[in-house]
Image 1 (cartoon, helix red, strand yellow):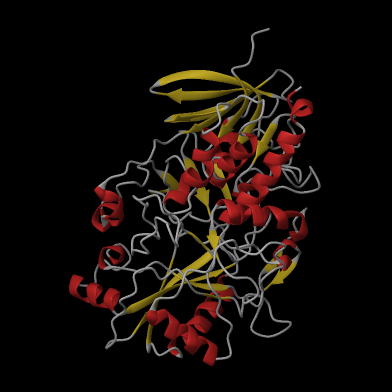
Image 2: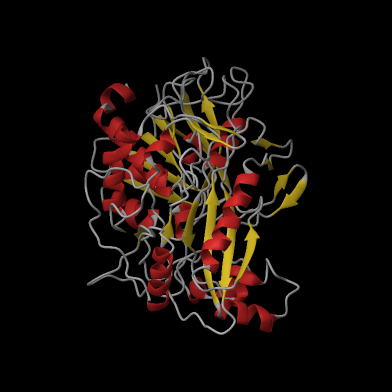
Amino acid sequence: MKAKDYDIVIIGSGVGGGAVALQLAGSDAKVLVLERGPQLPREAQNWDLEAVFCDQRYRTTETWFADGRPFRPGMFYFVGGHTKFYGTAMFRFRERDFEELVHDEGVSPAWPIRYAELEPWYGEAERLFEVHGECGIDPTDPPHSTPYSHPPVPHEPLLAKIEARLRAQGLKPFPMPSAIDFGPGGRCQRCANCDALPCKIDAKGDAEIRLIRPALAHPNVELRAGAQVERLITDERGRRIVAAEVVEGGVRRRITASLFVLSAGAINSAALLLRSANARHPRGLANSSDVVGRHYMTHNTTALMAVHPFKRNPTRFPKTLAVHDFYFGERAGDTPLGSLQLLGKIREPMLRGPLPSVPKVVRSLLAQHSVDWYAQSEDLPHPESRISVRSDGAINLHWHRTNLAAHQRWVDKCRQVLRATGYPIVLAKSFGTEVVSHQCGTVRFGDDPVTSALDPLCKAWDHDNLYVVDAGFFPSSAAVNPALTVAAQALRVGRHLRTNMKEILS
């Protein structure tokens, strides 16, 4: 019998794939990480707003469909995945986020694991990503067995005043946990080019820098960029994955391995499993439960610009403040509202897309006089909110929106809070289908193979050697950014694979 090319193939180099790779680094396993995109070049355009936001230099050119309507999704295919462009926010889910939680329009389901099982891995992920923060200020902060290893990033002067005005309202604002290389000897310049832009000085704690590069320092881990996996191939029984069909440099080939870890992101992982349908699995791989592609979530989100017509905002790095006082509701017994956190500083080119009819001079004045916030609330899982693959191979996304009335109540509450900080004008712009930054839920894990695709360690119920480790495993979205939770679970799964490697690979 022909020897396999690798022991373990990891598909995707973002937070999930990177964390698994790092856990396997230095082991006896021969590991290959496949990334469809290239290395992101270090170039002047990294911090050029015209190039990034207007020309969309780094955004994929592929076409997806939203119920037949073509659109260009906000996807970025590079080594390190979406974290090359994320805003460095690294929140833990709250303890209650792992439990069943009643919302206005339905129930957020319980996870098959609880916060306590993930807690040590949250701490490990915070250490790896060098997250700056402070425990115990956030009123919803879950228990930490280890403190942050880095203090919070200090507020710039204007934000310190706003924090004081929030406290004067009886609120408990807290330092936003941020993954940047800041402090003595650190690379971070605390510039304005962090949120939604790549960092050309490697100061952002992204998956490439914090996970992939350290993993590649070990000889047993290999990375191939520009290698797109189109299908997974099973054996005749359909129980084991035997190969990944890959297109690399225009050449199609099969790469064999004993174990496959799929971490292509919630949408693309689901699409790959669906495209890999065969006679044994006509609905797609890992899909005897018919949940693959279903329960898509990506948060209900709105950008808020708090504007004072006579006060400029000189802040460069504003990602230092968040508010969770209303995360689980305004009063005891209320249904949840959501989180409020600062956005990266909005500048005029960023407003051309959402405000195309507004004159440039007005957009510039708005950007100069605004403090920019991000209101986020939970998007509930719905079986008809789903990813499917068209006959031409393209992705179709049907987002069945949920919890919108609650989100609007949260936006209204945020307007009230922000006006009380001294900003009389608060403009709001919600994000639509094209923004898929917080995609999750499409390959959910659980305790029951009838209602889930994966077990609590993210192994496919239907296959002996397939794990899916990205935000696709989420049964619910909570109301905070997903990156740290993906990292924590991926570290947990990676340790499981390393500890039980002989048994798993046999």
